[in-house]
Image (cartoon, rainbow, N blue to C red; front, side, top):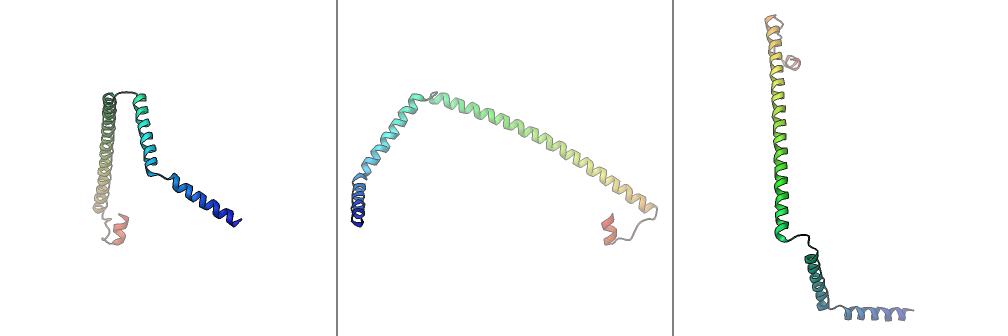
Length: 119
């Protein structure tokens, strides 16, 4: 049994070496590349010039849509910033009014940690 395995291994090894030919592999690769190039030329949907024009049109459309979306986002952010500014001004005015009222009525507390936390 061991002799049969040794013979099979030696035969497979020698057959593998005989079949491995770098020129044969390169030839198969070159033949496949040539066949693929021919098939691409035969089944190409449009010429190179037309394809470049289509790609350019798609790019310009994408560029226009991106600019439009960017403008919308800019306007939205400007509105949000204005809303936040108005809210901050209202809160500041409320705090000013509260401070004025409490100081005028004599309810002012001495400055300290507790007073600052609750203000």
